[in-house]
Amino acid sequence: MRLKSLVTTGLAVVLGLAFGAATAPAASAAGPRPDFQMPFPCGQVWTGNSSASSAHQSYEIDFNRGGTADADLGDTVVAAAAGTVVISAHQGSTNGFGNLVKIDHGGGWSTYYAHLRVRSVSQGAHVSQGQKIGEVGNTSKPGNNIAPHLHYEVRTTDTSYPANIQKAVFNGVTFGYPAQTVTSHNCGGGSANPYTPQEVCGSGYSVIDSAALGTAGTVYLLYNSGNGYNCVVTLKKTSLGTATATSAYLEVQGRSRVTDSGDYGYYAGPVRASAADTCVKWGGRAGSAGYDSPFEHCG
Image: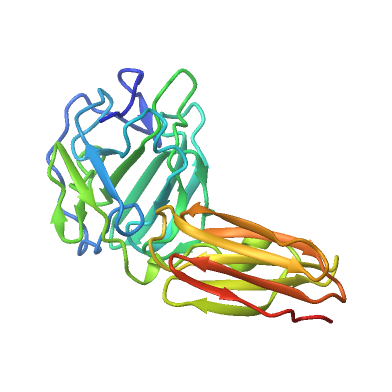
């Protein structure tokens, strides 16, 4: 289990509220608790710890998986419940949170996701449960050298900090403080692939064809009328966030096939090639399911 390798003792301020020397009992929430799930994609297994850092208040959790210091760096972080992003910013020298996303879930409940390598949502955005909001990182304030991990909190608005920090509950079960290994059940409607074909291929591309890969994914053919390029991407539907065999290919008639193949968490591709007024073959695989087109889309 690895968490923060070096944390400046006595983290002074979090979002303008001072850390207390002692932790008050958890407050009663202002409204019903949302149906929180783990802040990681469905099926992933993570170990949380609330006591490995001198900066911790009760009920805060640092999450890790893997056996090396940087094993979690870049792993996907998802919303524990639907809500509105009220903070998406790097906290700079204000506190030790680094890249922080805070989601307001209504009824006086909010969740915090700190030390992110990147933030994938903007302030004001509405997010679904299971939607990607960032990636595990080790950002903090200057002078704080920490190993990659996700710092996760649940807070309410009905009392002051730190009494408003609540015990985390995932899939209806209270986290087993101070440490527990938990499997994510964040598999509901919000667990759809957070990427779109257009996002993967880039600006100017539009979907012109697609083919289902059983229940495991979909392969898409896109075209950019501005530059005459085709693009192929395979988006997974299952095992999201877990590296599994996925591929996408594009073959322009008269040229060699170009393929992107590997163990990917969300998609394979993009595979692009200039193909104006030329026929193409395209396809891909997700798990054991595959699709191979004939030469087509020749216009």
